[in-house]
Length: 472
Image 1 (spheres, rainbow, N blue to C red):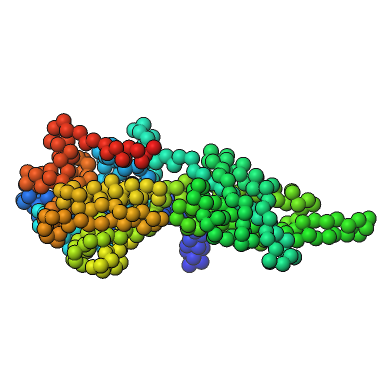
Image 2 (cartoon, rainbow, N blue to C red):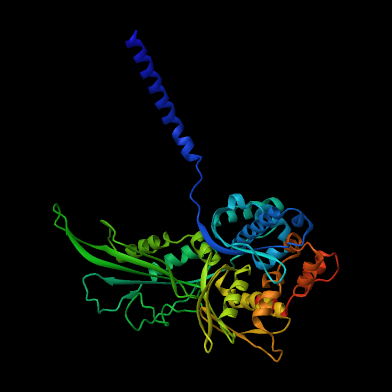
């Protein structure tokens, strides 16, 4: 009897293990794939004078956190959606994407204590990790369902190609030669994406195929430069049966990199030492080299680079009267949609304040957005042209503060006036934040168009001619 009981138990365990083994692939296939994330700092706002919050303070705190989470997602949406398109379709995006923080935010890493500002609003700062892939998928699904064109068009990027070849047995002092055969194969691959192939300078004064000399890698006409170098060795093989000697070209190594010419960043690099690859003729070898290098680059690779999930820039602000005002300016920048994160680096009364800004969007329009979003928002907050963009050079944008003749207390103005982010906020966002009449009037002073639209008035926001020109 004991033997039978043990036998039955073993059979049950065996069957259970078999069932578990069979079900395991299904459970693994249903697991959520790892998604890329981006770190975002965002500011949440709420109106404490709203009747709902007067009755229940916990609702005020919940609304404050909800707005902060929504703003974190909105900043990531700005990676994929043009600023104007986001504003025009804000209510739709808010309903389908911004309010779904539960699935789009991986975690809130830190949050400040909420505080009541002199501007009359409750404030909170959070640092959140947001799924970029999930936000993009939601936007694409929504675009298809609602028949709206939201995702940014990346235009027709210009890509230059330069492939150099050299003899592995020769001295390193011998200048590498350009290979038109390999380049043409690679150009055909790039052209198949619908992208433009741009000319690459033929002169290489350094003799180094991977020189970062401006004459070679700094071609500002092309958006991206693909540079490769292949090394060959001539190999002689004598056939035993016939005694005939064959000459082959063996590829000993090839190196490839891709450079973003707008930033100078090497966005891709790879070294490969192939195994047992040889060709009867040099031309056939070079054709295959062009194909091998082409396989390293896909349409999605360039789209992701053009989309530019995050880019780091330096913003220098001159004329701030104190360290305190420089800290308050950092908070103003955090609230702006295109700004993912701000690091306050240095302050000197003579040389100004230096900020490192992580920016979402195309690197081609950073200065434009600084001027149309950051500078204009600050000027709306101060009700005069207090700030001006004074210089743009590569990854550095310079802004100057003009104290004017008003004798205003900059710290007091920063604290008592509604945040700059509300100067560019859409009526859709203001509807959930500005609920009391007193808050409405305070925001009207910096964003009259949105308040007019929120109130059902007919006033429309006019497009600035400079913004219109820059988009063509």
